[in-house]
Structures are given as C-alpha cells and as structure tokens.
Length: 201
Image 1 (cartoon, rainbow, N blue to C red):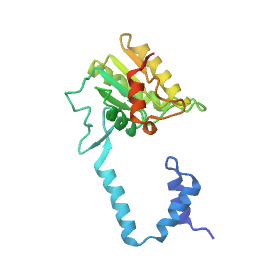
Image 2 (spheres, one colour):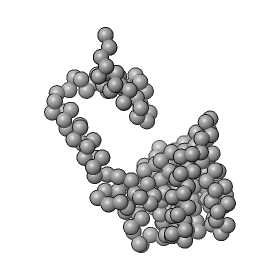
Image 3 (cartoon, rainbow, N blue to C red):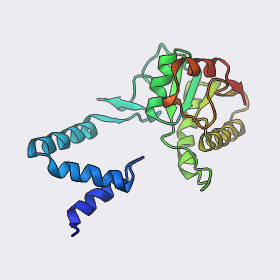
Image 4 (tube, rainbow, N blue to C red):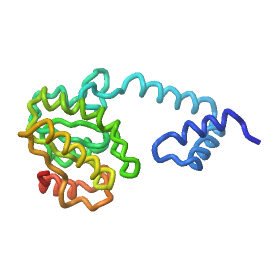
C-alpha cells in the first residue's frame, strides 16, 4: 500500500545530491518512527539555516547576517588573487592549506562532460568577470575537481577568461591530486603540493 505523503517525501529527499531513491526511502521511514519533538526540532533547524545562512552576493560563498562573506569584506587579503572552486568545502580545505592568499569564487556546479551544458557556468562567469574587473585581479587559480567534469569546467573558464582578459595569469592545480578526485576529499599535504606546483594554463 502506498501513501501519497510518503511518496512525496521520498521524491523530495531523492532530489538531494548523492541521495538515491533507496536512501530517500530509508530516511522517510526513519522520520515516521520519530516522535514529534524530533521532527519539530529538525524543521526548526532547517528553517533557521534558511533564515540565517545565505550566499554571498559577490562570490557565492556562505555568509551569515550579511549579503557578503568574510573573504569579500576582508581588506587584508591580496585582492589580486582569485581561486575559483566548485563548492563551499573547497574553500575551507584551501584555507587549511594556507597556500592561497586572496579571494574565492564558488561555482556551485561543474559542466557535466556527457551533457556539455554550459548555461550555469556561463551565468556564474558574469559574476566572475565583474569580480575580476572590480578587484584588478591578475592571478587566477582554477581549483575545480580533478575529474572529467572538473577538467572540462577549468578549460572552459580558462578560454573565457583569456578571451576577455589578456594580462591575467591563469593556473590549474598540479601534482599532488590524483585524477578523478575532488578537493574536499584530499589530504592537506597533497593539496598544499598541488597549489605550490600549480600549472600555468
């Protein structure tokens, strides 16, 4: 017997990244077993997240209580350097490496090499372009994942940047990161080595 409420919840959970329909079913059935206090607390936490945490208007990084993140508002950073990453975890990981002194831009996605749809990256590039112009950026590190999607995204952005800005040096993460890997899963020492040995594109 199927219940519409359960099916709708399963559909909602399965729309989340990395959540299969099977996993969505397990989460849904788990929630059914919980008491009202647990459910109300979960709803409050999701609501508080949405109310208090948002995306920076400039770089898409996370921010709280403001429209701008801690990096975009930090005048002590080297604003001539920009690291372009895929997600929020990448920013944290690169900060831990202490090898990048500058700004960040979070793409929120990469180009899928099978579909080749560049529309989302094209939209983000408009923000990147404005960021470059506003901060007189002259060094860019393309720190997307070392996967087919990440490589395709990095090459695509490299072409756009070089088309519009002739005097900017564009770099790619180098040795230290094995192929088919993403920044948020790599150890700090390997990431440090990868940033130090970045390759000019």
